[in-house]
Amino acid sequence: MTDTALEPDVLDERPGDAVPSSTPPPGAGGHGPPPVPNFNIVPVRALPVVALVLVGLVVAIATDNLWALTFFHVAGGGLWTSLDLFLGLVLGPIMGSMTIPARIEFTTKFMPKMLLIMPTLVAMTLGAGFQLARHVGNLEASYPHHGWLVASMVIVGIMSVIALGLLEPANLAVLFELKKPRPNGERIGRLMKVFIYTAGITGVLQIATIVIMTFLASR
Amino acid sequence: MTTATDTVPPGFGEPDAEDLRQADLPPVMPIAITTLALIVSGGILVAAQYGRPAHLTVPTVLLGVAAALLLVNAVLIARIAAFAWPVFFRVLGWALLAYAVIAGILEYVFVYDHTPARLLMLFSGMLVLFAVDVPLMLSYSVARWQPLDAT
Image 1 (cartoon, each protein chain N blue to C red):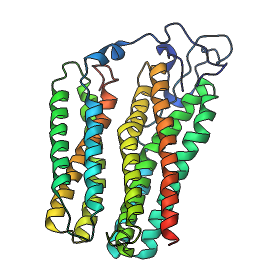
Image 2: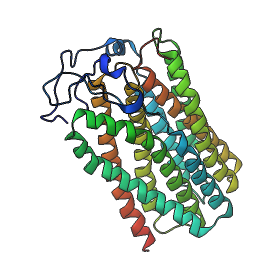
Image 3: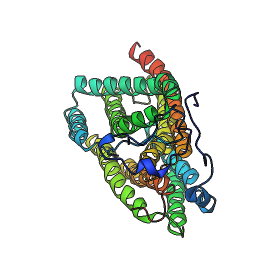
Image 4: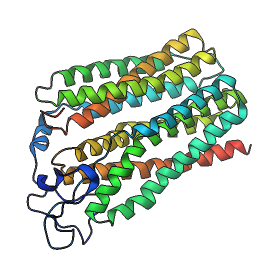
């Protein structure tokens, strides 16, 4: 994303999101690097929302409530898929066309939120999904379309390895890089590409999961 | 991902101290991703047999190999001489907490479902490895790009 190295002079003046007046604006002919807005790696204020969702998930599982399990599974899966596809196929190309300061500002505001949103959605979808499949009998080996369910498990497994092994580490590494006094723009660019591309790949795999899930739901 | 508005300042693309250190680092990420893939594969193999007598030999072997790889990774990381250890342990601590919660929810599901003892042991082992392997990946991938004196 950010295809330029960032110099330390401007980046030291981070508090308040202000652009130092001595810095020429991007595209104005100067080589001054863009500032990095002050940001929190983990948006602490959103943690109660995450806790609420996880408590709701546990309650849904504990009560074996069919509606609640379906809600958590469908809502979580729908949001997970939409976010992945939107990020990889819509937002990624848009970010690529943004100016470097705009990309940095967007990244510092967007990526911390993704750090909480994605694991929460994954926990919702998979936790409720497993319990739902068990509840309605789809998990049983005797289920006529058991092979399709196993296929969806394999796809989800591949997505999990990609998300946890590539996407999340890249997300976190970008945020810590941006917190440095001298962030390395080229490195951020490399890591952001990993993030965007893996989000796109998991989004495409999600479509395969949706095809299987809707097939099973219609049987 | 470049645009006409990108101005490339002097020094762009030149490796910094963290870039130069990368060649000395062990292959932690490929091993950790392989570990995760083995754990997930074992989980799928067991889940696919739900409702009938499960054959646990292959999942148990996968679990054993995953545990061995995780141990190898821990040793490899511990032997790194120049590393941003404070950052590594800070991220590791918080990530362990977060993934312990996630693994705890999954463990709760298995216990709640009265999963048979042998299966539960296998699932629990997988969850423990999962809850350690992912934080290890997160903390390593952050610390590897941090200066040695970073806190």
